[in-house]
Length: 171
Figure 1: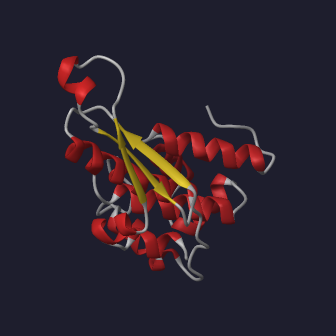
Figure 2: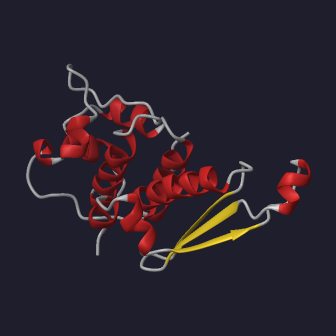
């Protein structure tokens, strides 16, 4: 199964594939935090991904956070081959474009992570060469770098790929 299949699942369907653990989180928070098992760890056995959330005193909030983090981890860690053909076939990227054709969406926007996943797919297919990836996506190299900088984890992953393919990391 590829990333596209897992990310298309509803929250309930994705959770059914996972092992969910609750436990008591350590740290500040007073008596309530020390007495309730509000921290949540989600393991996704098909991919080996593990995410945790323990910021809130509410188990429900932490479960929702952990699930969001699992989806982000799927986009960051799991690579799918990009579709063959033109950049017009990248629906996730097209949804994140402005009217001028620039790839410009904030990381809190629901369109960001799907677009980031496809951008990282294209980047790895181009062996982390930015100009080739930008051309394949139908955007400028500057726009691609600007998009990659939007999120620290996406930026880090980009530099990991660049290093793996023998390129200098971006600063």
